[in-house]
Length: 296
Ligand code: GUN
Image (tube, rainbow, N blue to C red; front, side):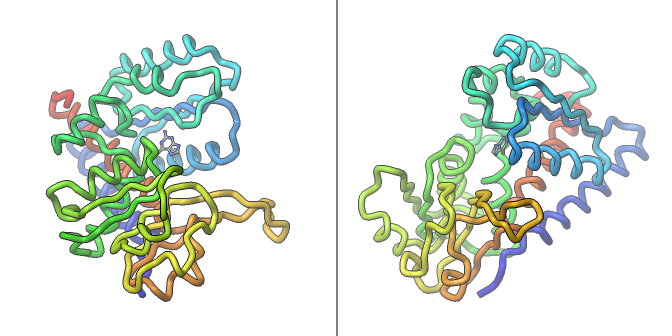
């Protein structure tokens, strides 16, 4: 069993971006500027946005964190997005999800200019990704593909089983793994809350992507010997022994599943850091597109 070390790979990607930013600066060109919008004070969202802003500063990107009250109206939020769309210095915009219940995720995502949608959530980017055209690809599936690429895992012909059909992870993951690319060229099954015989599907998986947000859901008997297991889950569970009062749990029962795997991602230090690396890569490209005068 080999660990897919997201922390290590993410750092390597961020190091290479830092060099590219230094080069942009030396050439007198614009450097990437990411605007992050955080609505309310959900603890997990605060942590994720904090990590994204910190990564920007470590790489040398500019970043702006816009904190808004949970009570902000949908119209006011749409106005903030409009301003960011029109701000010539801002290359990428991310609106951390989930949003408060009175705000429509769909309206907010649709309001982003596709050329600044570094989360890859806008329908124009999703559509282009499905067609295999250049697009921003949402950070978690993009990060997983970068991880498979780094470890040179030849996924051609493999059966990938994805647990979860979210727009952020499961669905784009299914498109990417089935696309005619390396990594890719997999036969893909998506499982969800209405799937019958879930365990049987899991046992068929050469690659098992667990993205359902249910701590330690995947146990050893569900995993085929030699499978590649990608754990996207990161749930806070109460843990009095931790200073923070919680521990982070993946969707996979790591201790019992890991010995069966050829490769497995740990939690933390697996998919999480790769999500940041992918977002940073997208933000760099958003800026590069603008430096080249193309609003792809
Ligand atoms: N919430 C959970 N994952 C993500 C993500 O990748 N981007 C944003 N904006 N919100 C999220």
